[in-house]
Length: 390
Image (cartoon, rainbow, N blue to C red; front, side, top):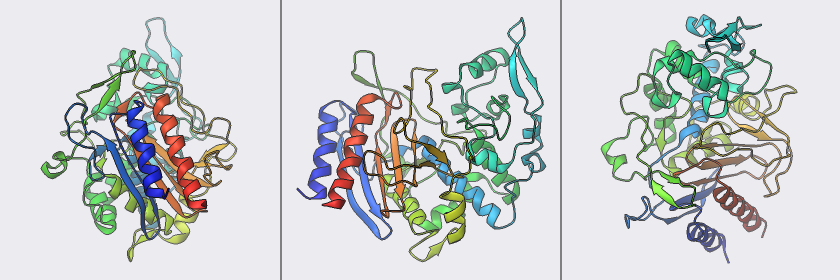
């Protein structure tokens, strides 16, 4: 079978086996799409097919776009990777490192050993964390009345640090702070900045923090797998009246739009004659490890919306200023030095500069890292490389 029929069959089988009510996927190279397909329904029971132009919440796939926006500001001399971020955002300098809790359950903090920098924020070494993978941060939220980041309230950014800046990889809301830095130095909202400097140049016409009426007509529903293994629709939508644009995870988009972003990375900063980053910036800031000797750690679930999560357990993984990097060849065939990440509603992408391809598979389901979805992703990616080799 050719790539189209092989991958179509894998998606259809995934839906039939209960991986998700609907799924879509693509493969691209620097010149265009090599594969695009979908299976199942946008909303289970609706009879409306999941199509490749369906709009989805891309969640933490947003982070790579925000990171690129920040790196653009570095290129233009508006931001400094290694200066204290508090020079741009004084409030980030007020974050302390959590050391424990007093007898009344109130958090105890101390001053960090060094100031947070933009490099720390973009590489997830700032000490910022997420409560969904850190139970101590849930205790802080309960004690101080701090909301979860998903509500896009400014108070959510008041969580203390889980570790000193520069000490270890700790996944969290550092990219939200980086988005604020972009706003501060550009004088634009993050949405306005991205539209002007990323979405318009790259032809990403169906991407935004706000769901337009045209996007809503193609919007997929979100689903939750219950303890019995069955899915039910879950009323879920990122607030359309946010206090801030959550650069860490609030974008809605299509797989076709995201493919244009991935192709820009493959092409070292340009797409269809529009350049958004210098080639040397992509090669150094986006494709090289920024963690030193630290490594990406497994994410241990602290809420039911996610399972424990780690991509390619046992493989060494680092982080650039925008992506996770697998430092060894993956069992699917993904080359060492490839870039990747994911979104909380089980959307996944990878960019392989060695093979010069990019892939994406997306559902709209919880919990994140659900075993059946991960099996589907593995089968899909393995089939992509087998088709390319054959």
